[in-house]
Structure formats: C-alpha cells, structure tokens
Image: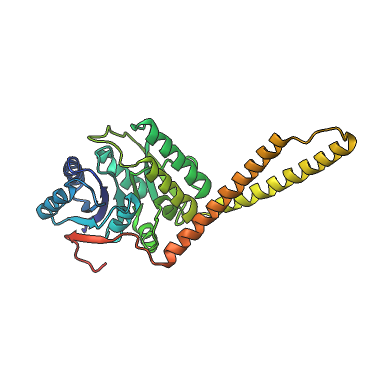
Length: 315
C-alpha cells in the first residue's frame, strides 16, 4: 500500500539557529505515522542576511527529501511560499514558520481535519504569543480577510495551515508580483475550517515583519484581490458631494434670512482641507492600483531563484 505524500513549505529568514531544530522535530513527528505518510520538505531562503542557506544546504545533503531554494534578493514571505509551492508534489501541503513557534506536534491534526472533507485547515491559537505590534498586525489581517476576501468569520487564519493539492494548483497559476496568500486561498474555496493548537514561544530573535513590511502586505491584500476600496472611494465621493450640496443650500438660505451673518473663513478652510485630503487619498489609492497594473504589465518577477539544491524538476 502506497503512502500518502505530505509536502511541507517553510520560508526562512534570519533562522540560522532555529531551522535545523524545526526540521528535525518535523521529521520526528512525521515518523510517528510513517507507515501512512511520506514527506518532502521545501526550505526557501528569502535572501536572509545570516548563514541560513549554509544550514539549508547541510540539511539537504543529509536527506534527499529536503529541498532548498535560495532567492537573489528579499522578495517577502508570500513569494517564498509561492516558490516552494511551485515544486510540491504532495496531496496535502502544510505551511509553517521557521522560528519554532509553530506547533509541529499538531501537523496530523491538520491532516485529519482535511480528510474530513475540508479544502483548507488553519491552526487556531487561543493565546497568541506575539508582541503588541504583531498582534495588531494579525488582527488587521484578519479583518481584511473577512471584509475584502469574504473569509468565514468563525475561522482563524495564520501561517500554520494545511491545504489540498487542487487548491495549490490554482494558487500557483498566479504569476504576477505581490502575491497575497489569503487572497489566493479564498478565491479558490470557502470550504475552510480550523483546529485548536497551542502556539509556542519564539525560540530566538524577533519577527522579520517591520511596520513598512506589514503595510506593504496589507496593500497587497487591498489592491490585488478586491475592488472594494475603489467602491468605498466612490461612495465617499458621493456622500461628500451630498453634504457639500446641503451645506451650500443651508448657507444661502441662512444668508437670505439674515444678511448680517458673517461667513466663516476658518470653517471654510477646514472644509476645504478635509475635502482636499479625501481627494488626495482617493487619488493615491487609484494610483496604487494603476501602479501595480503597470508593474504587472512589465512582467516584474514574483521571485528570482539564485540557487537550488535537491530540486530535480524543470520549474
């Protein structure tokens, strides 16, 4: 009886001192049901400034089921995931982080839940062990997925999840820059669920997401997979115009009824600045959409692979 193949994708950044322990624990956990499941592990070096690529090469040489991919520059976590996904051959694909926080002991909880008939299963953390800045970022990402991408409200999303291969096959058809994993998942399916898992403390270091990177990630979600922000811009314009029209009529009527009323310079300037700010904001939003269209038309790469190890296909 053939074993079902599980594919694991781990983006690596500043994890020189943690990735080896994560991989060894993952292999140990897989072996607990080794009679049912085989595995392949893809480690993607997102141009990390430390020596993580050397560690990945060492792991690949010791186990041919471990595959390494190295980028020519930093393209971001989501691009790193897409690079790993492009080579996966498993019927189930599981994603986890390189910092030791992912509950590796719960991988079969994801697998078993997927076998119940779900297309994608996320781990749910009742207690998120991140700093305040990252928690705010995660909450913002959750809200964006619910509002823009129509994610089911009762399902939690994070970087520890599993999905079936047909979901992945549609995701990797996306060849444009600025991939956003949540958008790619929820454009394929809403048949998702979560399982309760326990997030660990970070083994070492801090999150690689700066404020700039979080904002860039949110902009990907806003502009790549939804036109709702543009619709909001339209409605704000309509509402502002209606308010301005009503205020104009009220001002004229007030002046006719009481000619001695002085028109306020300060209030006029405040309204002008407010409306002008809204206009500039909406123009910036439209410009962001147009800029990304321009970059896509120029065939800007989603990622550029500099080096591979144990990669034998032609992708």
